[in-house]
Structures are given as C-alpha cells and as structure tokens.
Image 1 (cartoon, rainbow, N blue to C red):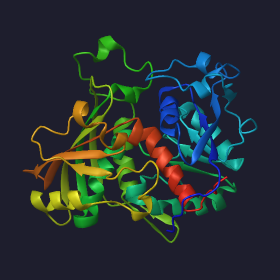
Image 2 (image 1 turned 45 degrees about the horizontal axis):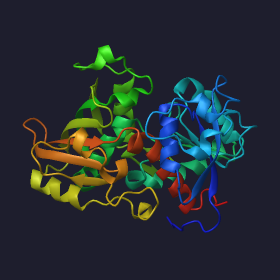
Image 3 (image 1 turned 120 degrees about the vertical axis):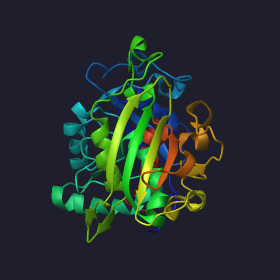
Image 4 (image 1 turned 180 degrees about the vertical axis):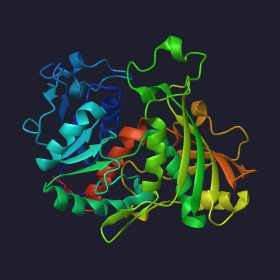
Length: 358
C-alpha cells in the first residue's frame, strides 16, 4: 500500500448529524486539520436551515467561531458537495442516507452499525487492518455506485481489537471472554439519566454485546481474493454502563492458539506498532497501543487522554487460570472509538489515493 501526503489545498468534508455528541467530536477533531476543511454541516429536518450555534447545544469547550453562523443543511446528497462525508447519524437514519450519499459519489465514513457486517464494507482500525480497504473495489462493483461506505467499529470493540491484534499476529487468538465498563458519553446526549447512573452500574447496553462478538472476528480477519475471511475467534461479551464520562474499559481473558507467558505477551504488546501505512498521518498517535506496568492501571481518569485520545492503554497482563492470558484495555470511546477513528480512516484513504486531494 503506497502512501503519499496530499499536496494541494485541503479536501472539503461534510459532517452528517453535526449537532449531536459525535458530530461535535468530529468538529473538534477536524478543527485546524492540515488535510481536511469542514465546508458543510448537516442534521435532521428540525435543525436544517438554522444557524449551527442555534441548532446545537455545545457540550465541551467553546464552539468554534468560524462555524457558529454556518447554516445547517439537510442530510440530502443533493445539498452536499463534499467528496468525503463523515456520518454521525444514528442507525435509524443511516440505513437509508449513507447509501444515498455513496450512490451520489461521496465516500462515507460511518459510525453507525448498519453496514459494519456487510461482507463488502470495510470495518477498519487502520493500524490493525488497513488492508481491508481493498473491499471498496468489490463494494463499488457489486452495488454499482462510484462512492463508498467505510465503517469504524463499535467503540468497545475498537478498544478490545487494538489490544488483541498484536497477540493474534504473534500467537493466534482462539477465544475471548470480555467484560466492558463503558462511559456514559457512549450513550450520546442527553444519554443516561443521572439518577440511573450515579452510584450505579447498569449491566445492559442495548445491542452492545452482539456487536462486540461479531465485529472483533471481522476486524482480525483477512481479505483473500477480494473477499473478507473472518478470524476463527469466538467472543463472549458482557457490556456494562458505568458512571465515567469518557473511556471504555475492557477486561479480557484470552485463549491463544500458541500459549504464551505474560512476559512474552508483554514484549509483543510493547513492540507492536501496527500497519506501517498509518505512520505519519495527521491523526495517528505515536503509539496506537501502550503498555502500563502499574498494578492499578489503566484508569479512565488518568489514561483516557493518551495520544490525544487515539491511544489504547493496556495493563494487568497476567496468566489466566482457565484460559491463557488476561488483561485490561482502555480507550477513548468518542475519539478513537468514534470520530477520531473515522478521521484516521479518511486520512488513510486520501494518503493511499482512494480519494484524491482537492
């Protein structure tokens, strides 16, 4: 995969669902981006036609002044001209709208669940499976559109997969038992009522466990003869909502094809750098994964900002009495697990020539 940085002016990009929590995170991730310029903001009919400042309740920091007076557009391909479209739409809207944009020629970077498991749709963490972008060619042929859809994973599945990828490459992962402790920001805004979550743990997040169980094998799989072959990994997941603002923690017990001692696993995790094609991209952290040796880390309060929210922190790597290894992984759910992951996917698409610089 050949990578070259764009040389011309910044690529125009649009954000669908720009008024919501993930849409706002896209705006923060893209502010002053060296390759991309946010030229269009779109949202639901109730927001379309309003000033962006009037249509949204800004959640973190200050709303960028250059966007405050921007008119919110409807989520209609006839109204959007940008070649790259970042979608923060919920699943109810994404199912119809994202294909419409792909048919119109736009490349859609989706956070929704709708198309993640389609065999011709790349489900990508660039450091882990950049090669899966090859599925776009098959997608365009089979669906007859000139654009395309590239998805990033469920936020908890992203954290787990970054931690599992080095172990899968070195030893083969056969079975994973995962328990998640997921931040309230993963529920969007206004999210979980305070009287439900404060001082509490909610042992249910709708549809979350099946997503984790399906998506990890797809991301750890490979593309052969233009088709995706999932990894033969069995995943069992328990998902919990906890009173943490940002940061999904995943505790995993892992069965390996080739059993490894904790010190061997730590060496592999510490040395892993991921796909070389990602290095040097604007949103790529120096390390997609870092290992902490502290007995009580990672912790959301202390570690979630690692790598500007794009680094997964792994700790407590030790022997499992029933499987082989157990560990704890932490990642920022709205940055690496959502908007930031999509931006990095788009950077890789530009750098590899899938979509040209403007």
